Length: 451
Ligand code: GLU
Figure 1: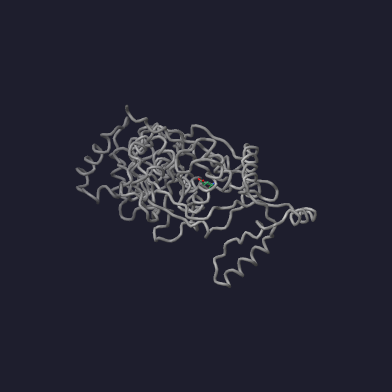
Figure 2: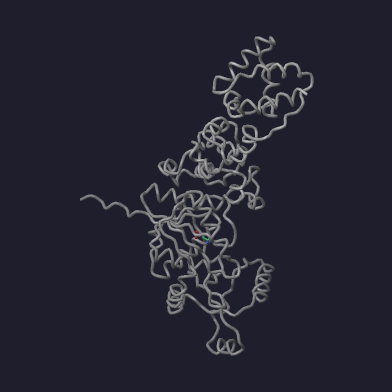
């Protein structure tokens, strides 16, 4: 008999719509996506939108837009706000089993208790005073207009698991406060809703950031309290990102949102290629998603925080652009820019937005500087411009003629021409640009630079 194949994985990316996605979130989404693709599994998008005070519909929309832009297509999606009845039913079960207990302390009371414990040199863990509340006391509180919020009674002992990224992890539950799972207004919190959903959608692997390690211990306890087998789920926590000096990335997250990177002209492919290997020993390569999925391995991530280096991302972007076919960028180029233009300039771009400047050179009005002392040479160059039509040979024919007429060569020959024709000292091959610029513009620019 052959052993049954393991079931195809089901994973989820579960953003809270409280802000725009940044590179840190995108890395988690990507890890889930690549893991699912690598193992022939399913990738779900779950919007954790039960926090009415902080969540906003426009963020939810922006998140789905960003994920689509990255190419991270999900197999199914849902919102937690549509499943409130499921959370209420699960909460009822925990109340019945005595694992969810009502609490009435205010924020101020809790703070005072925490401060007192700290003064006494004890860990600031919730003291479970409300567990001892009698039915009469509860009735009195409710008669006073107070509505309870609900805490989960954590079991004692240590929760441990073999993390698929970090290795063996253990959290001592007595060092953690019983978490609030239901607010006084009846709305459920993420800690709880996530477990209910993970159970009911058959999640096999939870892949998320290292900031969730303590949550994992708590949530494994909730899994068990709901009768599910947390041991059957794989947990993987990716170490957080730092900036290139090892400091916190959080200060820069606004500029590292996907929407602002997109506005800067960064390619989705560069972002996914960079993030897929960030924190592993593999070098980033400008690969597309299927190729990234083929080699994706959670075991390849380091346990140490990963340094996000914007220069490396830009270097990868350059490589993606240099290899990009015209079709991949056509609808983002200036109107009229065709394939010949793209092939002429793509090797000179860090960001696609820079193509705009070269389009001005090729087809717009660029006013070159007057190049001191070069008037005679530039006028000779203008007079020797060949007749149209122009092609990839025109540059060579023209400069050969100029060389013969003026005796110049090398930099002395080429630099004034480049400066006059483009207004820049560096740029794409003039052999490719010249036919795009055309005779009329070339003649005019040579004259201006000669004046
Ligand atoms: N909404 C949670 C967050 O954004 C999801 C964490 C998880 O993957 O369970 O942090």
